[in-house]
Image (tube, rainbow, N blue to C red; front, side):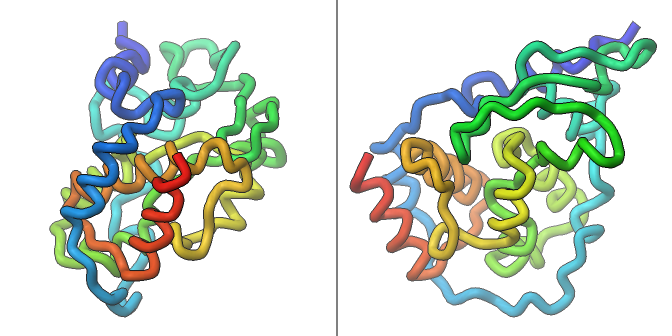
Length: 207
């Protein structure tokens, strides 16, 4: 019997939960420690450079997308026979918009809730990740710290933007959003652009 998705939940815990309060003081210190450089060319970027979407990097028997759905949704139901790995339905209190969104697995309905990379893969590629090996890029793409279940259309709107060009419309979540982006960039030694750092400092100043 598989352990379901508990491995990721225990691993992510407080450091990856969307409800964890922003550590503003810590975020400011980490932001100051990040290198500031210009954006490198996007040349060579492809999604598969970060491994298949989605992998089971923690070997708990569930792919990362379902791990994050299970972590972030409420009142989930699961496909029978999958050891609670495939989420069929659930409810999301969307951090980006503040809306409550009902999730229903299906070709025409699953996209209502998407898994956002807080630091987009393309952004990471242009700020240090193109120098990594394949294993590190795969780990980054599946790291719970950098993943969040969110409103699908807003995730599409964000695309590969950094904090200088996109922030969640729900202003009450911006401190947590920027703080977590900084946590991710510090963990993986990614750099920020001047405009991105200025935008992050502006958000943190309002927290």
